[in-house]
Amino acid sequence: MSADHRIRRAATHIVNLVLTEDYQYLDALPDAVEIEIVTPLSAVGQALNEGTPHELVRAVRLFLSCALPMEGEMPADLAAAVTELRFSLTQPSTTRL
Image 1 (cartoon, rainbow, N blue to C red):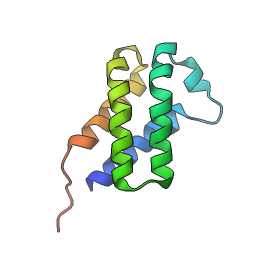
Image 2 (tube, rainbow, N blue to C red):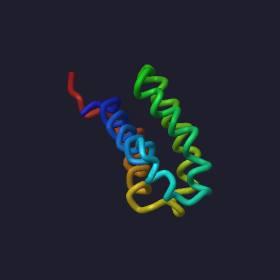
Image 3 (cartoon, rainbow, N blue to C red):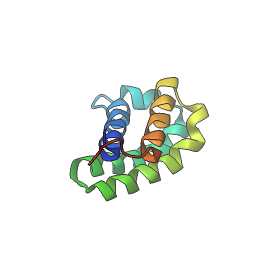
Image 4 (cartoon, rainbow, N blue to C red):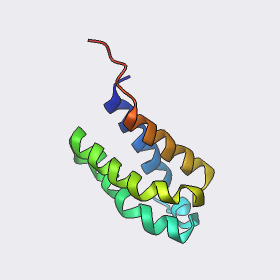
């Protein structure tokens, strides 16, 4: 699986988890977590929909810089998704040419 595909899959999972249409998950987050991650996560969502792979990586890095310090205050499923996204950013591609 390519690095771009792993990043896109992990980023999509977090966006779909937190930024749902009913905002139920988002509203249940601790205020400090919500304040730190909503804006950068929205940028990730926009990059997923309209951006280049480079713009997605830049948005993911911004999101992670805000999310990682808050990881201990996040629900377990969100913290695991953030960890998966961080690892997807650092793992080399497994695609062979």
